[in-house]
Amino acid sequence: MKYYGSLVGCEVIKVQARYDEYDDRIWPVIYVRDPKGNIFELEVSQDPEGNGPGFIFGLPSPTA
Image (cartoon, rainbow, N blue to C red; front, side):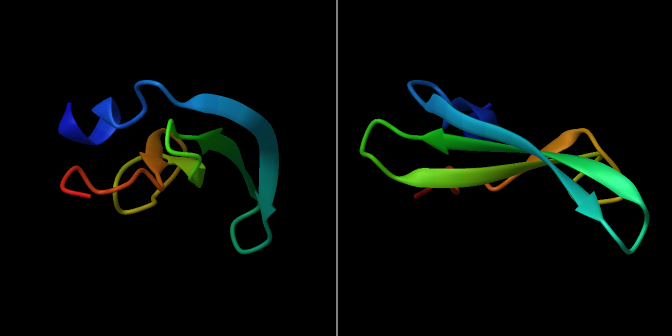
């Protein structure tokens, strides 16, 4: 929850689909702005290894 908890208070500012020419998949990408004004690009993947859609990459470190 530390990792995903960093989304609390963020505002979604843009959503797009990114085509990956390497494996012909479409990856959801979500752009958010945190309460401090920092913008993050979140890519949704299957797991932390990036094997497919489902896991969110791009969140700041829980210790940041």
